[in-house]
Image (cartoon, rainbow, N blue to C red; front, side):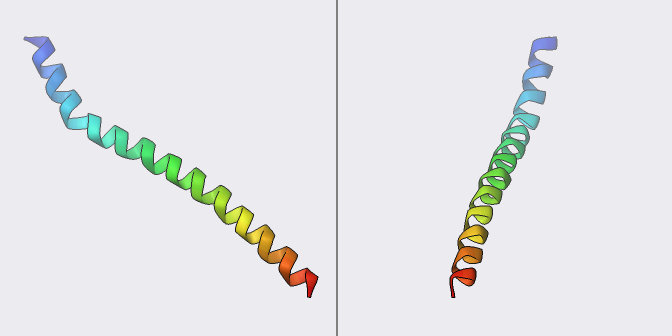
Length: 48
């Protein structure tokens, strides 16, 4: 019986955990992209 309750918990919290991991990856990815864009903008601004 304990396995079924732990499976229920897994089904309950599994998607939430996956969502949190994907959200973290997205923030890191966007942070790197933002930094690149900012550096490119700074170079273009100083080039004028």
